[in-house]
Image (cartoon, rainbow, N blue to C red):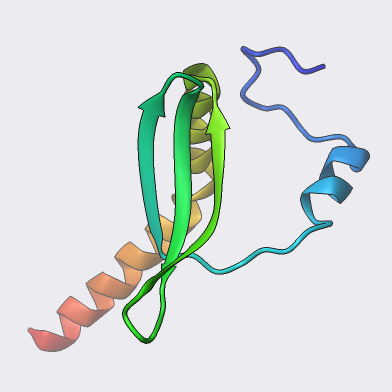
Length: 95
């Protein structure tokens, strides 16, 4: 089992296989709340008809929510950087 303090944890081959063994529906909205079982994050998709469609939810201990936040901050850096470059090019064209 990984050390809870280790933010560089690499999944085992079995965990990696499990992570990709099920469906991955598209989502574009996230709703979070705290309840008696911990942090709940629900995933929905606003359809082309404008109606929200439930796609799934997870419940986790708040400490695991913090780990998720930390992981997303690391994983999304290249996308944030790429978006900033696109925005800079767009701003340069309008000047």
